[in-house]
Length: 291
Image 1 (cartoon, rainbow, N blue to C red):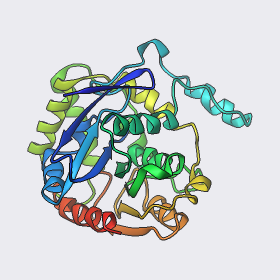
Image 2: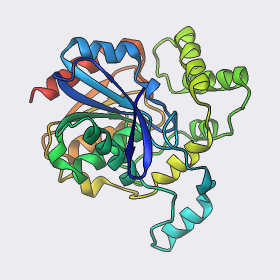
Image 3: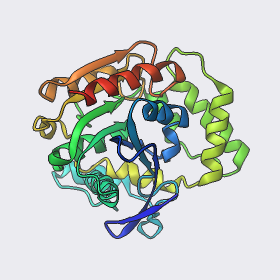
C-alpha cells in the first residue's frame, strides 16, 4: 500500500475502485486500522459508483507512531480542564482531520464525500467545519460531539474497553472478541468473522500504545457541538439504537445541530458495523452523496 507525507508524518492509505468515480474518504475510529472498513463494505460502495479511500490514522496501523511522545497523563489533562486551560497532548483531533485532508491532497482530490465512524466521526465533523470547501457530503456513524452534558457510556463498557490488552496474539484476540461482543447490539455476534478481523489486525500491526494518545487527542478541542452548527454540507447521521458507548442521544444531538442533517437510527445496532446493517448504510451514503 502507498504512503503519503502529511504534516511531517507518513499516512498509510489504500484506494479501491475507479479514480474517476465519486471519491469517498473513510475515517476509522479510536485505535482502528483501515481494516475496520471491511472489504465487503468497500467493495459494495465501489459497485455503487464510489472511489473508496481508507487509511490508517496517525499512531495506528502502518502510519507514523508517536513513541517519543510517551503516554499521556490523563490526570493532568483533566486537571487542565478543571483550571479552564487547554491541556497539552501529543496531537489533536484537528491534526488528525488535517491528516485526512493531506490524503486527499496526495490524490489530487479537491472535494470528497466524507464518512467517519466513532472517533472518526468526530474527525469528520472537524474536517467539515475546518475545511468546508473540501466536503461534498458528510456521513457520521455512531459518533458524538464530546458534549459532557450528553449521557455517558455505560461504566462497565468503559472499564472493559480501557483495560490493558494482552500482548500475546491468542490472548489479544480472545480479549478483543469479548469487547466486541459487549458493543454488538442485539444482532447475533459472528465469532468467526470477529476472530478473522482481530487476527488480521494483530498481524498487520499490534500497537496498543497509540490508542491512549488518540484518546488524549479527543480532549482537544473537547466539546465540538457549538462548532458543527457551521457545517453546510449535506449531512447524514447514522446511529445504533443499542449503542452502549455513544448513547443514541449523541447522534440525535449532531443531527439537530447541523442544519438540514438527516438522522438514520438503526434498530439492534450497537457500537459496531455488523454485516446486517451494511446494505442500509451503503444505501444511505448513496442517497446523501446525491443531494
